Length: 439
Image (cartoon, rainbow, N blue to C red; front, side, top):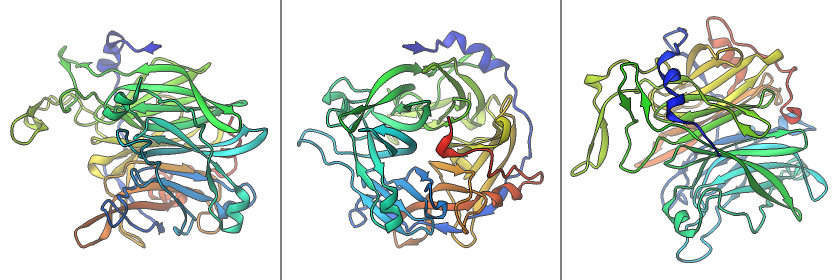
């Protein structure tokens, strides 16, 4: 077990400085949206959260977007936003157990399953504390048929829980990201209401996907501020600052992890082990004192009047969805959702991950994006609609509303629209990186 001690964080928490960048977010608009889903009985308790893009090897314009819906499972969409398939979350195995609840999703290409190279959609099942695996059938995609098939091993064990009682407590698999290294495939999974990350290696179990633990990392829950005082983020009693949004730099094997009420971490992955974490940006609320109202509101409240000013300038809690845009020679960008102010922060992929600016997805052909959780970016051309790449973001407030129903969904944004919105345009590089051949 690799446990990052609090004493090792002190210098990081007090020494690093943030690179100044543009202060006002630029704006872009989406060109496609998925149909709104609703977190009520009529809507099947569907609550959109995190997307992943599978790139079709023969016809990239036929690629699909897979999105998690929490209690409602998964939806699979074409690039025009139309739904191609719906997969329900698994039911509870017995009356005292929890049903499935799908949180995050990512893609691995070419995993050898039962002797065949198989593309997989991997999902964190928060309800059952498992990683679920779905084989993606390119022939079915081409024919317009549902392409995902569950290939999870029947004996797949809980990722974190020791037994069913712990599964019931729901401190379970939460965020997820995936990557390949030569012939092996891995997922990193975070734990709900804890700081723990776990690195799992995928295994072929008689033609089904299983996994085993390679390493574990505990991020800090308490931080030493520049004035020498200790601070923990605002939380309900017994909860620790969790991670959800994560992405791996697929060439450099670096994990970027958003600890929601803390900031954005950079963590090397060397020889299937976690290296020491580096906090590259803090949320604005970092270091702010808080109180918990245990009697009336039963919630944590920040004391912003006494904010000591130790927070960052670019992320408003919660720090959420993270994705990496790969460009030539290690260049490109790390994008992180600043959920508290409905923007996305952009950092350089290389060097010290300098902050380069922020953008917001505003009303246009579709409505804008608010309270975004997951996001993913693809650099390669995806047909006529997205000839310079695609950014997909979760939208936590789909409008116009359907009466009192709260809708969520996903927005599709041309990458060249994002790149061109900046005063100094971001890179558009469709040639130097192929997500299907990343390792």
